Length: 243
Image (cartoon, rainbow, N blue to C red):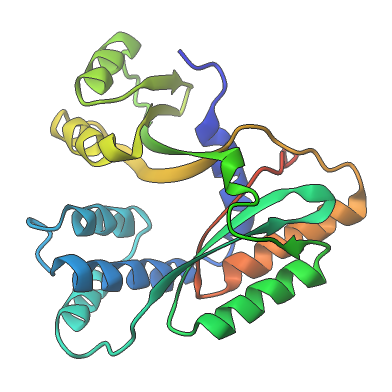
């Protein structure tokens, strides 16, 4: 089984930039809005919406908020038309960065993202300039409540998991993004406590920053990107130091 925990790497990197938790309401709300407009408001007939509702609940978004966003998107209450935009570029010392956005104003978002890169020692690149360094993976993370590793292994492989890593607090299961929904639903049906189930972009290699100024600028770049309401996800290959 995998000895290197990709989840811990991702979690460490996300924790450093997800300081403003209130932003998560806005970001998931936009995802739900787009999903409802594309696939309808019934989670029984829209598996992507079902996944987003689970994601919202895992992030402590109140049920009333979730229902309000779905109802608004299903009716005529939300006139915003969000577009998906993906930007790729480099942070200080060539750290690879991918920024996924949902925006109702491409020019505004592009200008703001470019400004962050320029201000904090990086530069925005062309489409495809760093994405080849990342692969798409699905991760389901279970709460480890004294779970039996052999049993978890059997169950995760039954529902399409590819690999798992066990530590004292969590069990991380890797799968293809296509199998993520079935794996989450299958493990839920077995009574497992799921912490998160999301698709992530995982870098093939990581870049270490030695210069203190580069480290400061990289942190500021990530903070400003994550703080922008249009930005949904930020992926990078900086090997962030342990706190």
